Length: 305
Image (tube, rainbow, N blue to C red; front, side):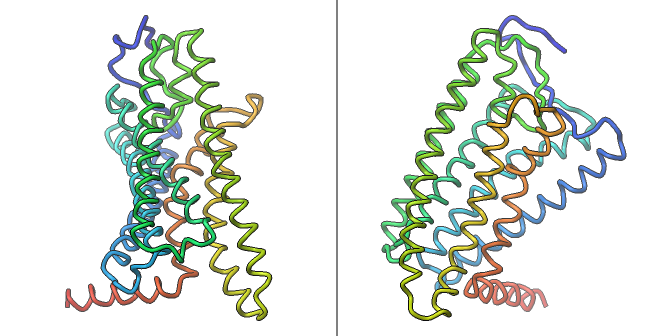
């Protein structure tokens, strides 16, 4: 492990491999590749379908498109580098590459969480499209500002605890562990407190929105109408629950149960799995989207013939 007095002497970081055994590394590579291709295909299909089919130019599908964009970006910011390191038998990521990966991941994950918060708004289907554009723009802009502040905060302090990042991508808490003593604890606590505050506000907003939604749904006289309304809410609840539960466990788990292996698994659960699962969750229960997807795939196949 390299020791240095400050961050200016640091040119690169060493990412943590999934395993030291070649056979297990190959297995992890194939699993990551499968998940990445699933996320890539699923999100690109949703983006293309919503953009091309004018019947899907509604607030609900507009937000689905905006949800697929950060999913596509966040998984592309972390997984390809990890797979490339395996192919080239290296662990190195440059200092600037690490900072860029850090920024892009925080930006896209934050934007996704804010978009999911907007999607919980119980009247968003009644909002005209220009308002949806403004709300989505606010989510993207806030995510960008949040990521810029966190990345600048993390990479502006001296790093003198080596250059080994105990994660398969440049994760802010792992970078902060490399800070010189005196900086690390305060910066890490500050980062966690800011994230908890922002996340808690969004969480409360989601809960209050769903309280109003469920109260309205329970007043629907027909059982079929209530079932249809609940089925519309279920995909969003699944996606929100997956993101919040895995992210909360990753950043707030007790130090006594923390280990490099567990940190890797949890990071995969909140950084890699959701972008692959989200398109499946939303498309399975959305008949309009499924029909449009089938139409798009059939048109592509017939054009090739």
